[in-house]
Length: 539
Image (cartoon, rainbow, N blue to C red):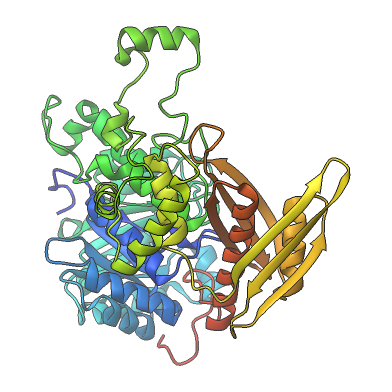
């Protein structure tokens, strides 16, 4: 089956592995917004989460399955360790989807089996076979992953995969869990599987890999040449440690270099048939949405979606591009949905025009969300003459898709100057409705604000990152503030946008504290790779 596909299936794990990035945790509404954009992007499979991890993760997967997993929509997948409890939770969570998948895994490398699982090869073989069969009793679409396949003994790996296929797995995912392999090694691994697993044609070969050595995308492209036909990736490459293979880089590499890759699909080099089903014009929107939702900024020199990806400063390059764009550009920025349409609305624009433009940008808001965003738009429009698409996105992400407001910033006021001690006064509405005002001094205006907020909101945390970016050019530009705070071993992000970066800084910090408070109330979810299996959940 894997060698017969004439295209690559895109399996997006932004909402599962991507969300495991420190500080990237999203709530149900945010996950649903990302899932809807992934559907517009036309990914084949969305791994919506790890349902057994927490009630919140279960709710998110179930909600996405019901609202995004339509008959014409993507397959909705839930991750499950090779235990009955995990598999049952995944089955219930994806049940509302027209096309649901259970993705179960167990480690197969000697180092993982000895130190993490404390199980023998024979035990792992038996568990893999039994749990794939158990997952198959819930759905016909079962994916199996031998975790840390890249460091597993090949002969043992072949045996595990053969057992998984016999038990009913229809997709076999080969993970480079620790980002250890090089491209030639990854290609050889896939070729070895195709040559040594007798029933491999009954399953699609998938690949999953991390970017610890900066080789994830190159590894995947080599795996495609060797016969892999599903790629597990994330928007902006977010994920554990150094991240995952980036969806936008893989898709555009296969698009721009079709002539090179076509023969590996049995197609003539000149074929114009797309090698993925991705609607590339939705890539930039997806990148911006995920960046705003997770608080993980995209570095300017990031391939495909970075701010500098289509910029030219060198005089020689500028001259060439002006004469013919192909001299220094191998793809059109409009191909990923990046256009030059900056001025779209003004302060006299009405609600219908506002809703229509947001819809064109990929934002479908309910009436309550639209009202909040429209009021904020009017507020910004009174301060700015020109409202750009980037401004609109910042408004929507700041107003309509925020976390629960346990603490609400009602007032922030700052006094500072070259010969003055920075002083801030804040008023916070507490969860019980009481408003508390307090003041503090600091080394600067933002520090004074945060010190004042800490006097009111007594939640232990350490500020580990603070960044400000201009949404657009100009002295009246909105500023986006992203911060990250640590509580114990967990990191939480906060994001806000405002024409006043001092106000944005205050809101971003309160946003992060609200995320932290929500997590403390709900309890910390378990980690699919590292946490122990709770008692009573099966093998």
